[in-house]
Length: 411
Image (cartoon, rainbow, N blue to C red):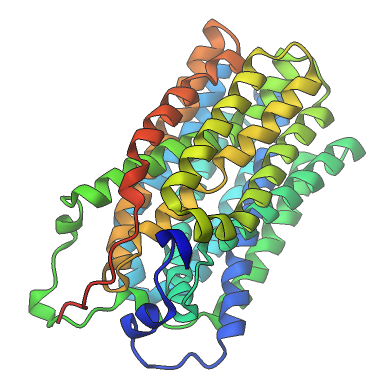
């Protein structure tokens, strides 16, 4: 493959054990479903944030603090996720967390009618479940990628984006049809959890988490927190996670508050952003194979910056829609390619993915309150310019994602 974007099939096949997965196609489909329905669940909640905000009478800064609960939950779970996956496997981790996520968001869907406390509590548990689910499905996705011998991780993340688009469009339809937040969210979340719980039974072994070192020689988890390349990849992923998360949390609110659109139009702008991310992730592997990770990611960062500027300074909703489109394309590949870069060495994929995901999720911890605070002092749209600074940082860090050379396996 050209551009050094992916390791050769022989490297991947040599890097994993020879234990056969009964049906690799079924495993691949199961991973897609895990990504897709996490996206559906997330977007089903995100699409109703404006209505929940109105019911609770929250200012932008207070809304940011409420959304912070989910980020805190994720940050709590991520340092534990590597151990959880190592102990129970990605299959059981995703299955259990799907049930926990379903219960937590159902509690939010009912609890928002009674006040902020049930929402904050539900969002914390939702964030915890999301963090562990995310790491587990990325570890399984890395194992599938290595077995296939070609880049597929961005397409798994495209599956997540497809789920978010579907969830956002269904959310827009629910808003237009006057369906209550409670009924809409409970039906979507419970169905998503049920489908995933069944689908993950086709997961294969987490071979990406195995290595050939004697048990006494395996490095501790703290070792991976001291690796310069892993830390740089983590900061890079943080920048793109902030870019992605800001769009998910704030585009619909900014369209309603700053551009004066209806709730349905705001949700459609959110859907445009998600659709653009999906397109970028689906077609991204071809660009990565041809031009390499560094060049593609730098170009996407520039595109994302252009979109943010259009969205922040546009004078008409049409301009904001164009900005959301470019913003989504620019944000599309940073997170999945960061996960692939962390998993370049199959023997150390799980702990490195855990470190990178932990750093990246800090964006979801600090992003909502930061933009909410700025929204109170200017506008939400202008507050989103904080994302631009991190995109500039990501351009300088992109060289850290160069693929590792196909060095001999450690024995």
